[in-house]
Length: 146
Image 1 (cartoon, rainbow, N blue to C red):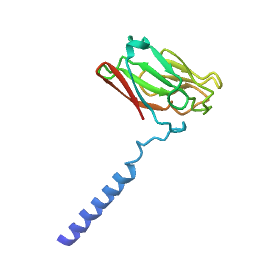
Image 2: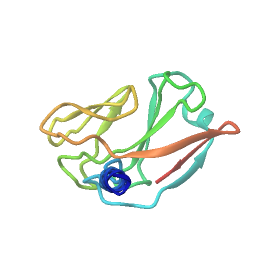
Image 3: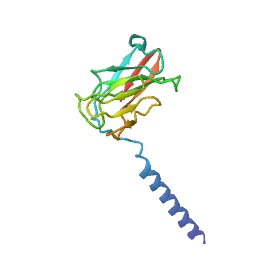
């Protein structure tokens, strides 16, 4: 009877670890936008990023440029960073244009919402969100990295 219980426990534990291991990589989203190393460090007051809902595009960073958006939902790190490359028209020449909390692709007409932090398309044909970069707000400076 003890050996039977031990086999059940071993089987349950094995299934548990296999289940955990197979789901462990689901958070590793791979964007349709090609990888480009990003390492930015700048003062937001130089770029009029002082109020929520404002965005600025840096064209020489990322794959299609980087949009920095000031979000009001997180006071400890109020800045979000998205690649300006449209996820439907993946190209360095077809960049989304940000107008506050909304970014629009001039090539295909897709629109993306920046407010709330995920860059999801609100109007197609794009179905993938904008590629997002990690941001930190430390010592009055914005740090953006892959």
